[in-house]
Image 1 (cartoon, rainbow, N blue to C red):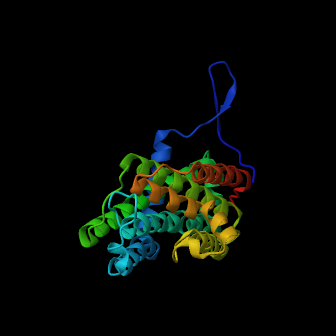
Image 2: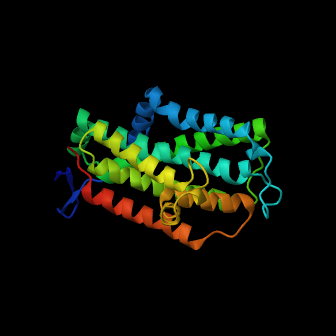
Image 3: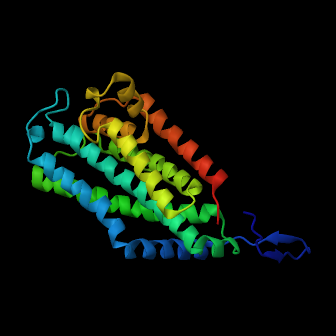
Length: 268
């Protein structure tokens, strides 16, 4: 959809498009945050489901099986915690974010924004900022529960783990923005988001060790955002070198999702 931005006249008489200032960006992010906070149901999944999974695995043998070459860390540390963190990122990025944007489109919020100097980038960036805040809260809660209730150990390479988490978040958000850009209705966005989330999760280790899957499926799952995030976070937790293929896969998801979302974003 084409929009017409208001223009201002410079001293030389030349008319230039008006660009939203920092105040407009802050106001838009604040509005997004308020709408997300009001959606109580949307906050339950990224905060409640990961804790439930932690508790389920925390009372199993996963907390006792030591992974060789991980500095004494258990399967709970090296596999379960990375899976849970990937779930937090995935729910927020692939399910919640597209649903919100599709709802804004149906309710006319995006249409009203389209007649202002706002651009699609402002809307998408505001959603990403709010999603980063949600992710930080969900990850912090999961780590507190894991360490306090089940004596989980923190990553052997904390800086690497933080960088991987940031890259995995960017990859997941990019996929979510692409879903939001092409989904015509909130229900379609929710359906597409759920399909993507469970497809990524099922092949990436959300339901158990990916080595139990057929080799081609397991290999493909490692190169999707969820699997690549779990593998890279597990390596960071164990202090092992990261696999370049997993990092390239996450970077590729960022590029494809971002370019696609910018190309196909619709106000109405």
